[in-house]
Amino acid sequence: SMEDKVATYPVQVLYCGVCGLPPEYCEYGPSFNKCKVWLVGAHPELADGIALDGTEQLESEPKPQTGKAKKQEEHEVVISTVSRTKRKHTTSITGLGSFGVNLAAASKTMRGKFACGASVTNGKDEIVIQGDVQDDLYEMVVEKFKSVPKDSIFFLLDGKKVPAQ
Image 1 (tube, one colour):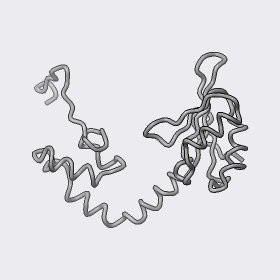
Image 2 (image 1 turned 135 degrees about the vertical axis):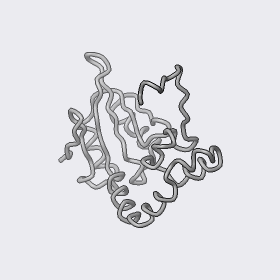
Image 3 (image 1 turned 60 degrees about the vertical axis):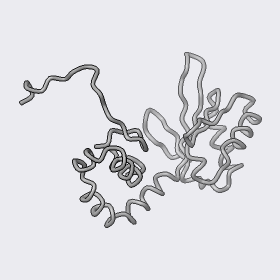
Image 4 (image 1 turned 180 degrees about the vertical axis):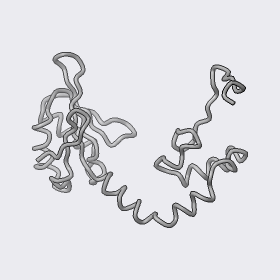
């Protein structure tokens, strides 16, 4: 029963060395196969408890389908605006890298066009631009980056993705 188990604080949680999630959630992460290899090597006693065999068999069947769906999902550009203070905003654009756009060069172009600071977020496919330039940014992406189709550009408004047309 629950009363028998008393948690001792601070609770020690093991995190995957590949994706950073707890091992029982690795299968839902982006790189499950690499996670399995890491888990078997680093913590073989835990590898038995997690459904490595079952998941491998399940994964091998529908993999082409999930791979395709993931590609489509990844290949979209999302433009969102975040309010920093009452009057200051930042505009974030994610997903340009998945269309083969050089993020550093794109950031530099945006700095020049909008006369503001723009930086590439390390480890993410994201450029953060100082100021609310959401509408101008859409027009610039359509104009400058021909590899990005118009129908894969979205605005993030109140937490909902809205097509940018």
